[in-house]
Image (cartoon, rainbow, N blue to C red; front, side, top):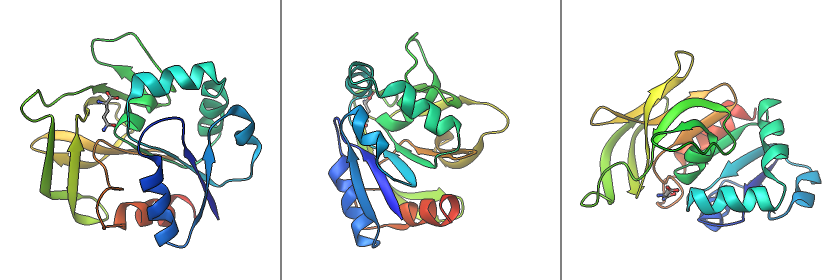
Amino acid sequence: MKIAVLAVQGAFLEHENVMHKLGVQTIQLRKAGDLAEDFDGLILPGGESTVQGKLLRELHMLEPIRDRIENGLPVLATCAGLILLAEQISGDDTVHIGTLPVTVKRNAYGRQLGSFHYAEGNFLGVGIFPMEFIRAPYVTEASQDVKILAQVEGRIVGVQYRNQLAVAFHPELGDDTRIHQYFLENYLS
Ligand code: GLN
């Protein structure tokens, strides 16, 4: 099995490290040509969604990635990755990949709570998972067929829709590999 990690900007190395810990090979997607490589799943890392979206357009990667996701490629998106997938961004007309029927609010916790650690988050199918939020978004609206996997203080921070698993926090930053394992077990086997 091989997992491709979008590597144009942001925290892609951390995701690769988790995959390597789990004994899974990774490749980096840095240019359109890399999409011709053989891979079974995709990770969209955290970072800055505006920069990532701009680079994906300039590198002609946005549409091929959208097509692959629409055709069933399993994808794990974290933080900025969730924003890239969202069909709508609150207060903004920009849509990047737009395959996930949710509305997200960017930098949604205000200045004081820009970054925080939430130790007691419950993730459906995984259990209590330590959640690291960094200038994170949350989901303000989700279509009925989107499954809510995690909420923190009433705000949706983890969702699943068909082949797409998206979280507002950073499961790649701690030592806990269970969300990545959950992705591999439920989406790739
Ligand atoms: N604030 C970033 C954005 O809007 C997301 C932050 C992150 O990925 N940690 O894209």
